[in-house]
Amino acid sequence: MSGWDWAEFTAAAGTRVHAAVLGPSGAPDVVCVHGLGCSHRSFLPLARCLAPEFHVVALDLPGFGRTPGPRKPLDVRGLSAALASWLRATGRQGAPLVANSAGCQVIVDLAAHEPGLLGPVVLNGPTMDRRARSAARQLGRLIRNSPLEPPALVAVLARDYLDCGPRRLLATFRYLLDDPIERKLRHVRTPAVVVRGSRDPVAPRAWAQEVAAELPRGRYAEVPGAGHTLHFSAPAQLADIVRSLARHE
Image (cartoon, rainbow, N blue to C red; front, side, top):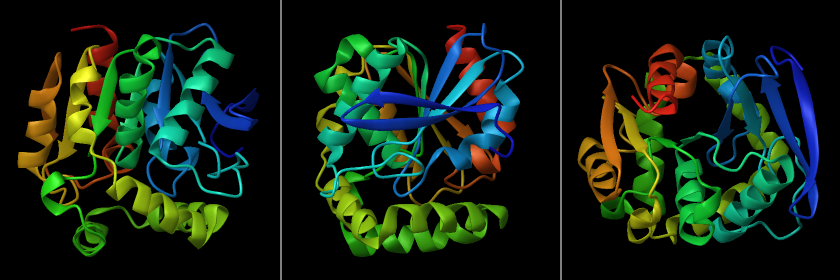
């Protein structure tokens, strides 16, 4: 595995869940949860920033990356149940969780249904903005975000989208559009940071600040000049936020 220390495979959620691991085995865990159609691969820049002091584990949810999924794509509840199964199987309950984009919806759903598994949470660019809950508006925002991301991200995402396939990608997108994340935010009772790039069109400032305000122990942070995928485009800045949260500063 290029750039990672090793690959971890765990029997959980009715499949063999893959996770990429980087960092000292005795260090505290940080768990990374990917967005729509993505995998562990885009988290490597963030993992490199955190690895000197954390054991970074980026899992692939069922149907994405190197984790086989069921024939019928999972909805948000199914994905969060899979995450819960994996957290229990690996003994990582209570570890800090770092999510990007749709991964934020998975973590918030986890909080609503399995609150005892939740650790401190970083929600980077949370979707779906309740003011733009349509396929056309979300696609337009993603297109506007593309020039803000490093060109290297295109190759990473192309491989990830090929792995999951168009059918699973589109079905999952529809499930995400139908998921009212704003109704579940009150269940995230652990310390939480909502962070966005200041130029992120997918998670506008008003929406991200609303998300942070609805979290019982939430706060808002912004990375100047960045777009939607901070774990890839601004990993050092995001790593500083993760460290601060993990230390409860």
